[in-house]
Image (cartoon, rainbow, N blue to C red; front, top):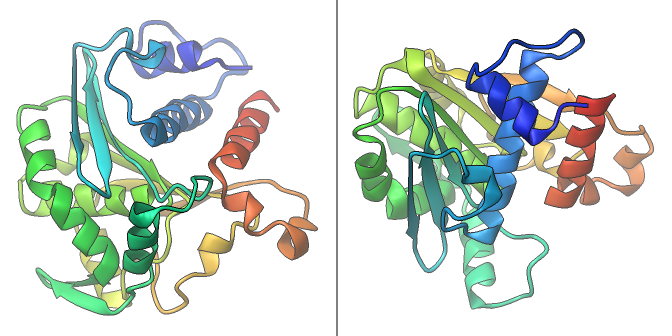
Amino acid sequence: MITIQDAQDIVMRRRMMNPGEDMFKAILLYMWAHANIAYREPNGSEDLFKNAKGFFFHNTALDFCYLVQYSDHGVLSFRGTDTEDKINIALIKRWIRNINVRPLVVDGGTIHRGFYEAWKSLKISVRKMVEKVDTRLFITGHSLGADLAYLAARDLVKNCKVDNDIVVCMPFAPAGLFTKKGMDEYDSLDIKTTYVINGYDIIESVPVSLVRPGLMSWLYQNPLHKIVSRIRDHLPRNYTKAINYTVGG
């Protein structure tokens, strides 16, 4: 089984892969570690970041993101809507925003209005955080954070002229974000994008009018989950279990 440390060493090319190891599995585990820890609003002191050269974050009343810079790459990660958190005003406001699916035309693309409102609260800070990044940039997040990852990748390549050759976007459990027109506009930017869905995660079917770009990587779950576990398949802890099984299987 590949550990997070193994995955980091492979991604940073500090060692050759051993027989049976897989680059995609290493990146999958590595990106999930960064996406999942965003729910804890890290400050850079966590073990995951012990090889970091720099750490930056931005927090608003509703949203959180961070950028960690390593020697040869950076990881930009966004917090999602915490579906396991206690009900509070901030959580209610996030959900109200999440269900605002009316399409919004932005720079020629058509986008989920509520998610774009979330992105606007972070956009200026994200641009400042990445303006000096000239290495590979991985962008990730779970749920709402996944859709913010899409919007960040789109904005950085389209409006900030970040070279699409260095950007890799791996969203976990993204909701539908774009209309067909918006997806075509995203695809035209040629951003390397793979989104990850755990089993029969209910997020894959909402909202029905919007789509998500990129290749899909599906994490296996028993077909019975389609009947009894669609909401549970969305929870971060169950993404952790599925990814650990995939990496170790």
